[in-house]
Length: 219
Image 1 (cartoon, rainbow, N blue to C red):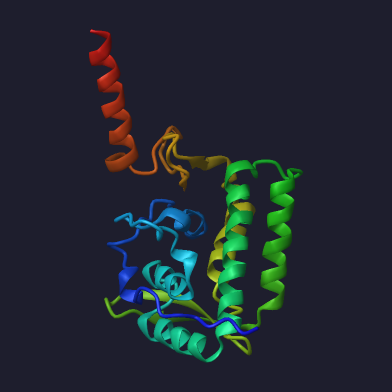
Image 2: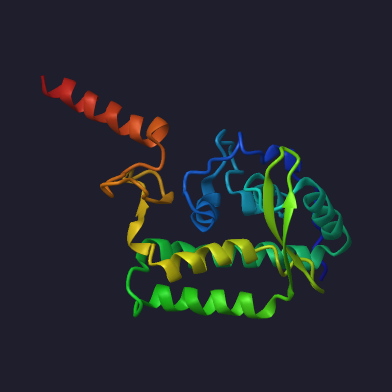
C-alpha cells in the first residue's frame, strides 16, 4: 500500500525564529526536535511528524538551503513512500541519539554501542560529495550532496555531528535540562561545567518563579 504524503505546514513555518535551538551541537538540536516549536500548538509539537516538518527543521538548522529544501519537497511528492520511510528512520535515529545523549558516557554502555552501530551504518551506506556553498545571508554552509537515493544523505550532517562528539570526547559535557517538565539536552560549554537549563528565559525562569512561590508560602 502506497503512503500518500498530505500537505502539512509550509517549510517557512519552521524558521530559526519559530524553532528552538539550544543544544549547541547539531545532533543535540536534532534530539530536541521532538519539542522544538517555540509556539506550542495542540497535536503538533514534533517537527518530525511530517516530511515537510523534517525538511523545515533541516532548513532552519542551516543544513539545507532554500533551493535544496524545495527540491526535496518536490521529490517527496514524486516518491511519497521513500519520503515517509526517510521520516520514519529520522525518528528512529533520533531515539538512538537521545539515548546516547542521556546515557552514553561509557564506551561499554549499550546506548553508546548502539549509537556507534547506527552512525557507522548510515555513514557507510551514503555515497555523495561534501560541498561548501554560499548562503543567501552572505555566510556559508557545508552540504552533503548524495549520489543515487536523494533521501539517504539528509541525516549525514546530524550523524557526523554525533560522530564528532564521540571522537572528541564531548559526551561528558552533555546535559539534560534540570526542569523536570523539559526533556531537552544540550552541550554545556560553560567554564565551570554547571549549566543547568536549556534556556534561562524559559526553563530557568520557571524554576526561579517556582522557588519564589515556595519561599512566599513558607513566610
